[in-house]
Length: 375
Image (cartoon, rainbow, N blue to C red; front, side):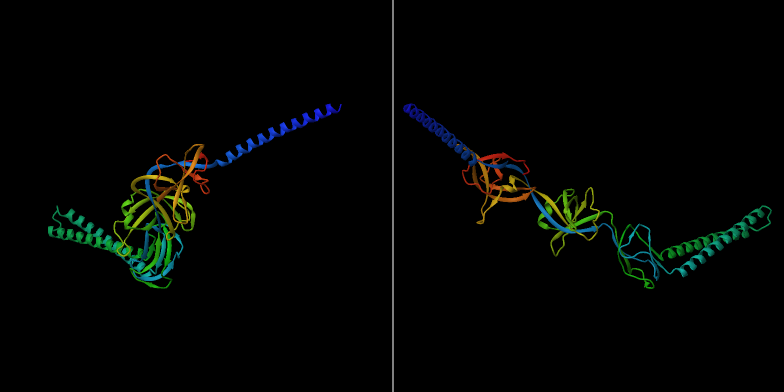
């Protein structure tokens, strides 16, 4: 009986040792697998591309109006009425100011009366001429008398023309006692008040048009050659820099500021225009200039800059146990559209790391994951 119990105990011990050994072996295998998997760091990669190199030009300027005028009167007079003030919006033809026109109105009435009198005299002269001509066949009047009547008609016609011209002149003088808006816009400033005497040429209002606003910038002479008329651009208003609006190059004034050596660039808004855009606002624009060359480019996130001044990218190459990371020094060039021109030991189609490149080491195993081209 004792021998049977000893045999059973021995079997149980051996069985436990076998199970324990198998478990340890499986655990070791699992740990090795986990360690191998952990060594493969997942990274996001994109392909090195060759493309046209663009130079991004950032400009600062102002919103300007196509129409802006310092308004003055065409005749002297005393300011009697003011219809607008600074900040008033006006339409073309609206009355802005009126002068005391009492004397001009009386002169106009007198000239109209003189024209009516001249018209009556002409009608009488024509009547007498017709009567004289009707008597001529019966020799009831001398031919010289008829010629005199004809001369009187001609004189009356000239007198009427002179009187009508004077009446029209007086009408024009009377009309000039009112100042009207030559175009729609906003009154930027008022330089006169009621009771003041104004003379021709003295500015009384500043009017700025709100239609066809333009963006004006001063650009350096070294970039003028790359600016093309009609080129697309974007701009931001200083009041709302978070919003980006579309525009296009309208013109480049081919005359330089002799002091600053800069040229005037005009950009026109395209499509929807900011509802709050007004003349005088600050504006920033971004313009891309074609450099005329092609080069290898990588996304901006692929570049790592070290304190010692080195700039590198991490590339993925084939290793004995799978993809591994390699550090490649590069020289960055121009930046545009989120990509950077690079020169160095890179080839077209090579894969560079854009995600997870901060803590890589040379030869480290990686698990590359393709990223969108714009990453």
